[in-house]
Amino acid sequence: MSTTARTPHQIIADHYAASDRHDLDGMLADMAPDVRWTEMAGFPCAGTYVGAQAVVEHVFQRLAADWQDYRFTLERLYDAGATVLATGQYSGTHRASGRSFTARVAHVWQLHGGRVTAFEQFTDTLLVAQAVA
Image (cartoon, rainbow, N blue to C red):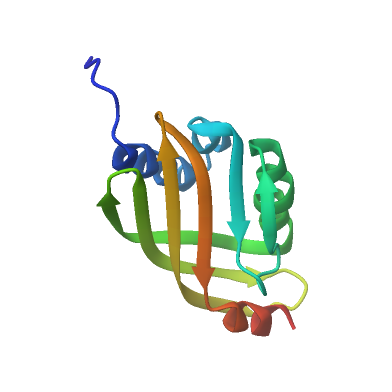
């Protein structure tokens, strides 16, 4: 096994691989204790949450409760050193409305010392809102 530290790009690739496996512990493994996680204004769980537990409660658990088959499909990771950009697609079916959506998305990740320190999401919130209504 290599003792080489993982790059920010690999850390984020590992996060998405854990997400695909529905491995919450794996998704949280590299988050700094004071990670700042921002969901875009207009998104159902909009806001900035500090700390992994806040992210779990206000984002991951809420998405799982409100959406059936909610997922992020990664298309590409862009390596910019301590910043990693992911592009892809969200999709899911809102449980209450029964409506589905698909929307393009970009995630911007900031890392320091091998830990995720910030995350920011950019997506077409109108497409999501139309599925909720």
